[in-house]
Length: 409
Image (cartoon, rainbow, N blue to C red; front, side):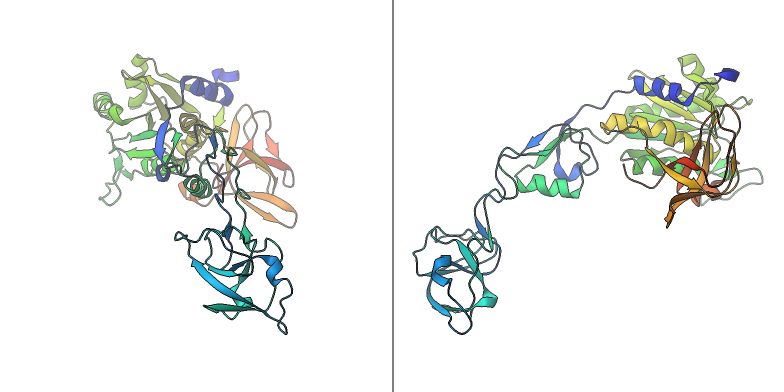
């Protein structure tokens, strides 16, 4: 591209080409919430696995009670009782009734269930004042799931309903990829931990919390490491200490052209790529593989908005590929722009916005200024307006592509 910048697509392709999904293995169901299934699951049983009662009442042969009314009730002897999980009576004769609880197996010889509300709830004999239809209040074996049905496809992101279904067919585990371990390092001698005093030239480290929370929300395990000063040796020591527990390392700060950009200074000899990407905010980027295990490292700019936009654009897709989740990148939606937006030529602009809907459909309003340090405006946003590289102005009322930051995908 012009000015020697790398396109957003080229940088993302570089990253994804270096990332391989983590190996999958069977994991207990409750550990897989939010993970992607790494196998197809077919049901080994039918659901229900036997005909069972959908009501508390009496199992009957419908022809015995077909004429029952309030004025002319039918009386049947009660020959037994079946509770859920306590079935001892397996069959009944015509002209009799069996008291039955919800979920209990319907005995052979019965084809319908009369709810308690249509009876006098008799013990030795029951008075029935209303007739069910044939099969009414009976849940038939296999009416929900048949043996051999495909229930979960490879790649399905597992939610509570999937886990409930898997448990219902007897599965205690499912193959899936583990949550990636993401180590977050903030560099900068000016940084201080929240809760400690500030000096006249120091600031609190918000980036590591922003990035760690973003990684956790993406489904990863986030390890937020203490602040690393602007010293190459201290940075490398901290990095190598953390590699043992990292599937990805994310740093913020120290990647531009300043005299104290220690991340760039420390990692360039290891072959980590550093350069400009044609985007705003987030132009200075770095990516490579470090350590004996060739762990991917993302070196993001230090301004909070730049760091967050970079995470969304490059780190999030990498996390999702490690987890086997597709699509890798957050999808865009179209929305009507409420105010005119200007954008520099040759850069993909990510403008903070507030996305909502009204009677005219989805719309998005720009939030705050363009400064990459304006974290207050970032916190007030729920979307990023994406202005392409070849567009320098978008007028109010036009439709734009929007990344909805709070949507699951």
